Image (cartoon, rainbow, N blue to C red; front, top):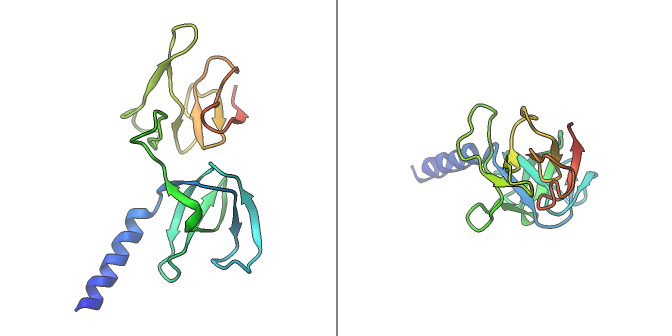
Length: 156
């Protein structure tokens, strides 16, 4: 009976972690399989965000992740949860279906502007995608994504 409870517990943890966004704590290799000897797909720079595709139950040190459309494995020692408590940046992941939890700031002209926010795809009004995966709604290019790893690409 204890084994069954343990397995149910692992299954529960796997479900809860799927789709979770994490940030890299250093530059890390995205690998073909959960082993250091395996070929690397690319290098993920420090501060980048990845989406957990599947927690590895067999090898607890690795997670299967999606990084910019590339699927591979990253050592868990280089991943951390996004800190929403002590960080003024908005790290709420949105599904393009709700604006709950969206934060705003006043720009240098005194205009109310939506803070960079996570979305599944570019939302209406977004002007840039930041390197951390958030979308910016900045009304000028100066300083856009400055607290989010810089601009990955301009949308407008």
